[in-house]
Length: 171
Ligand SMILES: [Zn+2]
Ligand SMILES: [Zn+2]
Image (cartoon, rainbow, N blue to C red; front, side, top):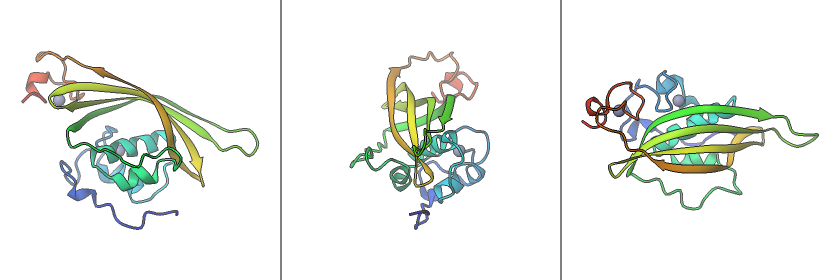
């Protein structure tokens, strides 16, 4: 399978507005950023794939998440929770290696994802591992830690807007 057969129509996803900034935080519109990948364009780097998967979590695009998940590790139940409100993605570091001989390329991305769940701010920090499968990047597994955040109302909003929490996501 080299393309996604059905259009994933993210326009119908909650919270999505055409032309809005891409949820992955690169600072360009969704149409110019993760949308082409969600329609089947190959990710040119592990970072691009990781960003597109974060956006797919935000937009609840389960088909895309399965398509970019190694079949050996992809869960039967995705468990995308409406209660999880993804706020921010920060890619801290990434890299990829040429394997020996016939072995495929592998890659990794170290990232931090901030979200709010049932009124509580949390932060997931993970090093994700990726491999090339039939010429395209797929997610294999990751080493993750989840931490609670306790921002004060006068602190910088954890969503990364640069505004104080009380003037941003607390409203
Ligand atoms: Zn994006
Ligand atoms: Zn905010």
